[in-house]
Image (cartoon, rainbow over all chains, first blue to last red; front, side, top):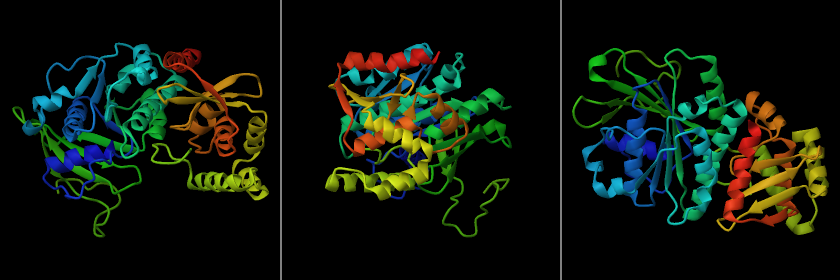
Length: 250
Length: 145
């Protein structure tokens, strides 16, 4: 789903290249960030984007129903798109497994995008590394099955949000190491500490070896729409600093 | 086939080898010696064990009307393992240890046996209902705990 997310972010920033191939969803994506870093909002924006493409329903898995719709671009929040997003709320890890294992039993059009918010909640339920590994494998296998059902030209995208802690603990890093084997593309979300009033997040998308790392600022103003501005494109810019990220603003 | 736009990609050398083998088998119905040597070079003793599993027809492709499929491999110990070809997953302990924790990207002997039996077309085939396939996938989960 890395490509879908990149389109969401590019479109939001009006810096879109124009030759996007909308059928290309990109590899499975892991969305990482601390609480409040905008993972749910971005997943939801990707859901609206995919729903708007009209290639099939979007399945949005989360443990607890969203209390309110995350703020997004107003244009995207139209009822036709919302109708295409199927929310499911597996209350436990066991139920999540059951959903994934039985995904092939459902009839009707295959989803074009599978999203899971809050993977860390399911993994926290006393799952060992073997079970976590199987859960990740099943997520990929389910998306692969949906891809087969959709047809030869398109795939079902997959994106999973995993909440990291401010201070990483060993449980976190073990899960992350396991997950990174299955999810080649990653998007890190980091709140901008320099201006807490504005609630601005830096989103760093690594498409997993298929393209350059790209970064954006995503802002959530108190009322209204999420806005996205490009930060700094890394590859292809010979003068860019390929080492650690520069501090300060572009 | 272990190729295509999959999330978790096999190392390029493995993919190439499997593709070459598939082409060669189509012509001569057996794996040429040079490919066997390459297999042993890349995979070491796992290659021999995997070829043994293939010879003994230990790989079963289980599919349901939905088109979803899993592989079951009867290991040398008599235990069966579940393999998901879509993401190169195997339920065996060797996979868990060497492939994930050590971040070693080569395959366990069961996954290798799955891909070799695809290439040589020697998988046993088993058709089950959609619900039975769900149970097979779920049972794997229960065995983990």
